Image 1: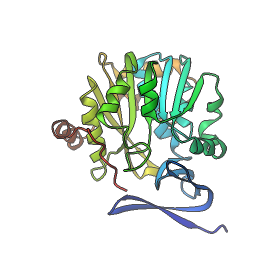
Image 2: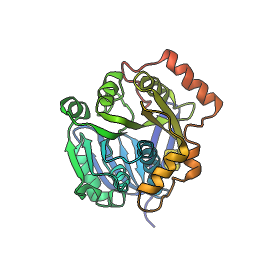
Image 3: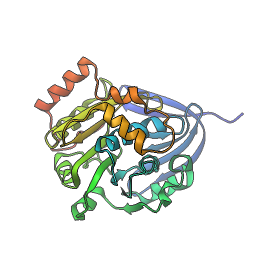
Length: 300
């Protein structure tokens, strides 16, 4: 029998979740972050960055489908997409399921991490990096947008939570969000992962929601339980156009994508943005007291 060891992810100074694993696939300190790829007993292979599980083989489709497809469906027939982060290539994989997509730019600061993901996480990316529609750029996302004149139909931010000193912590501040908004085409849609949605984890989500409300006309907070994260995970979708029916969004997804979904269905789309009362009240209060002129750091 293989020797069992334990990896412990700290949620806060008072909470932790331990995972039994049998093998270390890769451990490396890159220029930007601590990378760890483990084979765990509960969730299969896992990508871990700076001590936080980013993606697990058994349930990564839940996270990546719910991140990508609602935003694409809100636009309707997106032809151009910008992905910021997304090193393992699964966000890219989901975007490329859209028949309407003609070009995708993926920007990641950490070339080493992406190369390790190409090699060790093939079930995630499924060779999406080599699709002719893809332009892969290794650069800081802020510098890339500052120096770019391009615009996109959909911008997807699949970056780690803002750990102080980490590669992504400045990318959630309001100045950056304004710059990002200027790179959306008319009717364009922005979506981002937005941290944990539990009452002990939601301070970052609330701050990010308040920040987006300063820039976008419509902001939708939604979440779904991701088992390997051990809590509901939150997302924020933002746009400046007219409000759209969930039925139309689901129709757009079904009509313009290929392959079967693991997570997305009509019921999930209809419930998008339906939050418990305590959560909704927290979102409303956050608009009055919080704006991320400076990043709100995630507990680690």
